[in-house]
Image (cartoon, rainbow, N blue to C red; front, side, top):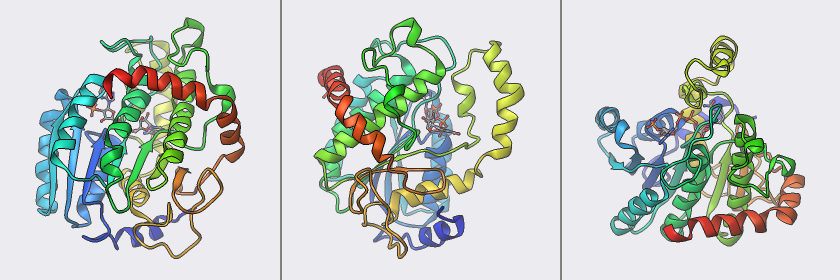
Length: 332
Ligand SMILES: NC(=O)c1ccc[n+]([C@@H]2O[C@H](COP(=O)([O-])OP(=O)(O)OC[C@H]3O[C@@H](n4cnc5c(N)ncnc54)[C@H](OP(=O)(O)O)[C@@H]3O)[C@@H](O)[C@H]2O)c1
């Protein structure tokens, strides 16, 4: 476990030379993304942040941006509107960022929810929670990779369930979970977690200069647990009476979660570059230090899950990657 006091001490070293200069946050309109932006801005470093979010979050995001400007006038946060569940919108907004910036140091991805509700598709015909937690996230990475590769120490951090992936939780013959028997909140969560790791592992292999982190945040009481429920359903009552009080008790403190994720964005523990880390280096999914894909648990430890990763590479990567490429191709 990386103690919160060590994380705070490391984060205090973040300054103009060690902070990401240009960062893109997709999902920073609330929850862990917003907490991480707050922690980053509070360091006082000069940073430019593209805060990408949907129209309905614009007003409160602009209030948040004003607050952040008073905390640190050197931090520029640019409100960037996009319906982030849509691939066409993802492409559009990435094209805009590409015309404005020479490089991107950090891409931080947190959109999504666990869908304990009926399967609902976006106007592009993809189940919404899968689109938010997987397809648009991977499309953001693929579009911004050319800019990430131009940065000195580029990093992609995706928050979902790193370390929890398993081959037997994958519906390889129904990756979009279209068959009714494959649809449930639990199955969608497992599927999302595993395909994210599979795709990030592939991307990390193809882009050895970029550090990838798939983070499992543990419980953080952001309200995320309520998002995927139908009002008045049995599940929503079970969550309200049993799960939500439990989440409130065992959750990480909001501010600590922001600090922990800022640490994942900046510390040399993961990948050797960034804010110096003088203790044991982190180990990637290949059981090596250096860059690559790091699966990070709520306490900041690397949990390489190497046995499952090797199995997934043998049995799933080709299928997942071909499917993903085919689905994303019109938007690349
Ligand atoms: N919090 C936890 O305890 C926990 C635990 C394990 C895994 N996770 C996963 O980690 C990630 C980050 O969690 P979080 O607690 O930070 O999440 P969050 O605050 O509930 O939401 C993160 C982002 O997703 C966006 N979003 C949600 N539904 C959307 C929709 N239908 N269309 C467009 N945007 C949508 C939100 O946008 P708006 O601000 O516009 O609503 C927000 O920017 C999520 O994928 C979550 O499932 C969370």
